[in-house]
Length: 331
View 1 (tube, rainbow, N blue to C red):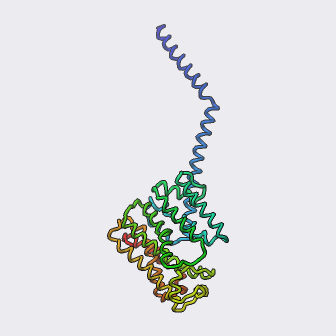
View 2 (cartoon, one colour):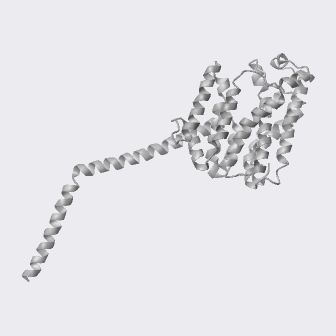
View 3 (cartoon, rainbow, N blue to C red):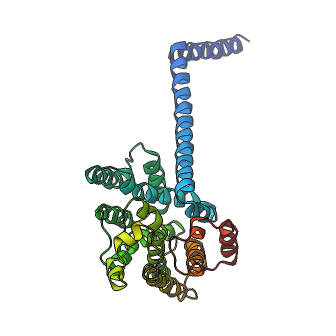
């Protein structure tokens, strides 16, 4: 009996000692510090999530307002590539609007240098605290996007800061390849597609996009007394820059438009010639062919009058046509 009491007393004594030891180790001050640390972690995670959502919305709104066709095309991509596509298109918009948004070339070149530095920082996992940069960093990490395509877009946009017309159609095609085609290569990477045939199609589609964009922007540029259409074609048909600045709708001006539009059509046909060899999953990256085809048909109906009022209106059926093309998995 005495032995049992002794054992119980020993156990009680041990538990009491352990309780006092824990009490000394887990003091109220330490508990408060731990709670504060936990709360800070939660706040940091919440803040990071909020920033991420804010960055995503910024890119979405930017693309929707400045590249509506690209916006709709991005929404039709698989979910795992959709956000990255919007980041890439927002990046493209940011660069594209530099030329028109600065009053001096030097300022524009400084912005291009910012983006070159930003790309380097993105690949060091130290993206600048800027919405597009942050979203681009997320896309690069998720899909292992090629750095060279991003830098090539910047370099080509930087060269285009010169306020002059393209010397010939080949120069316009090269510019389009280095900007628009590079963007499509990145979209293909975000879809996890590595295919020579897809790249060939992307190259031609990008050139067609660049050529059509140049045509579509002619009325806007002309209103600001700027003409970027290839000089060799203008000289061939006897059309001066002044003809475009005053919005001439004469035949020789239409002939220039015809030649440029025809070259875009050739590239579109070449791109489609690879359709049987291109992976089916790549077709959604080529949805802009719908927009190209629509504009080329409308400019033909306008008898290649690039200043025709009908060309200023956006086709309200484009979103439906894009959806149907994505559903059919064709371009």
